Length: 156
Image (cartoon, rainbow, N blue to C red; front, top):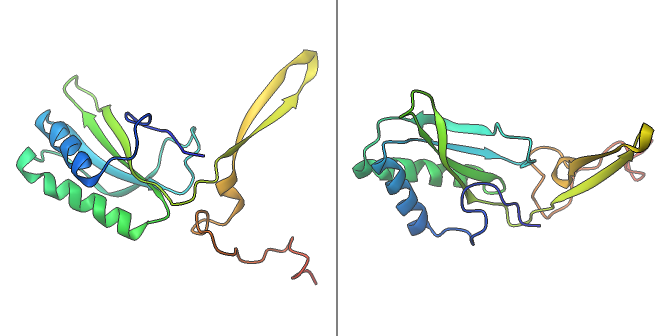
């Protein structure tokens, strides 16, 4: 399942040159840049972990600073989703002007929709991320997971 979050979610993944063009566009508009990452891209998980500090007052000529942060985050977390966010403060508050994925894990497990029937024929739905079934740090690796206490092979 392909996670689609952000401005360009309907397009194929950007190349590094296309990412650089978007960074340049954002910096041309005076937007602050931030890099975030997560291994749980649940739609309600809107606060991902920040990579470094947001970059304010970066000129378009200094776009390599933002691209360097993206590369560093990708190298440190190759099995995470990495997102670039541009914030516009022209209206007196920080507003997200641009946000898109710049890295995704090679394997995306997806989500399950849990349905619950309640009183008066009310039906509730809840998303369950398959990624959370593995411990943090191992969620997107295709290899074996460490045994748990529920594993019959390790039960005493």
